[in-house]
Structure formats: structure tokens, C-alpha cells
Length: 249
Ligand SMILES: [Zn+2]
Image (cartoon, rainbow, N blue to C red; front, side, top):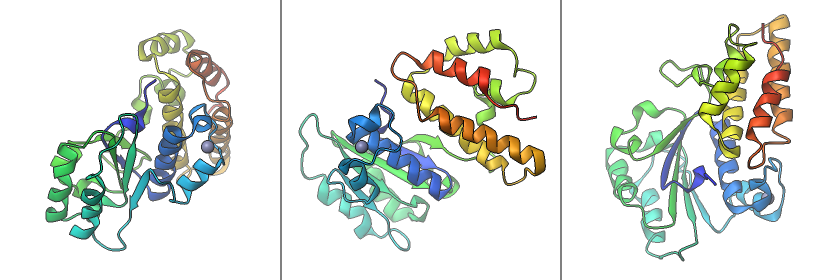
């Protein structure tokens, strides 16, 4: 199964609350079988430890001010220990936009050749100040919309059928896009999260009846994620969403 958390390095860009809950979800899916099955609100011991930042397989680095060399050296101290072949260890680096040239270059050393089993998740609300060499080492996920230049979920080949009024009732076209995209269960859940993030961003400017419609659409997707697609059922999940998605206009 495609497991996004297992790439060596990734950068998650978005508003702090969203990046935090996204990284928790990725970590829960890695460490907890129930969360992997789609239990988004899992409260088992493992998931609680992840949320409380007490999990033994994760180190969170959250400097109060800018990153110092000592903050980055936490990584170098830990990776001296080789992991078993099936072990995974995660570093979560908060607010990496406060890396300066020296600390970023030190971090780059480990991102360029991450030791086996070690994973790096970098979080920021602003990717524009990051060294391009760091960004290029990472799988980049952008959450939340509204900044110019960020990827727009409305342009996604499948999501566009929910947000483009001209495509809203084109079931045939939707089915073709569904086949082309061939999303698995994990990718489907992630796309729904992105669609919700986009809808939440609409609330800032929506008012009156438009506001109500957006809220209904968010609730609809949120409810859908309580029964997320299991492996092999992503097609049915998407068809259900498309047929029952509340109208936005
Ligand atoms: Zn759990």
C-alpha cells in the first residue's frame, strides 16, 4: 500500500493547525493499525502518545525561536544508532522557515543521504524562505489555499468535478477521470482532506446562504471520512461523494 509517511523526507506547507493535524494523521497511520484502517479519531495508547508527542519512534524538534545548530544536532546524535530493517523513526521539524543558511545546510547533509529507516517531516507555513536545495529534497504537500502561487485543489482532475459548476453533473466525465486517476484508499482520503481545506478557506469570504452551503459541504466530506474507503473500494467511495455532494452554488 502506498504509505506517504515512509518517504525519506517531506515538507508539509500550510497553516500551523492543519500541518499539525496532517502530520499526526501520517504518524498515526504509520504506527497504529486501526488508524491505518481509517479510524480518523483513534484514541488508542499509541495514537495518544503520538498526539502528546511522547511516542518513542518520533522526535519533535520545535525551537522556541530560530533553529540553532544544537537543534539540528539532535538529529545527528540519534542517527548514529542503526535501525532494524523493519524499524522506522521519524523526526518532525516544526517551523523550518526559521532555519538560517548554516542550520539549513547542516540539515541538508542528512536529507541528502538519510540513513535507512529514518524519516524527516518538515513543517512550515511559508515555504518561500526555505533554501531551494532543501525543498528539492522533499516530497512537498501543500495544505490550505489562499496564498498566490500555491497549488489549487480545484484544478485536480477529480476534485474539479466537485468545484467547477460546468462539470458538476457530468457523471460520465467524472467516471473517466476516476479511472484515469486510479486513486487508492490513502490517496483518496488525502484528496478529501485537501478538498475540505479548500472549502474551509472559502468560509473567510462566504456569507449568508453561500456560507451555509459551504458548511454543509464540509460536513458532508467530514462525515464521509468517518467511513473512508477501504482498499479496493475507492471507486465506490468517490461515486457516492460525487452523487451526494451538496451544491455550492
Ligand atoms: Zn490508534
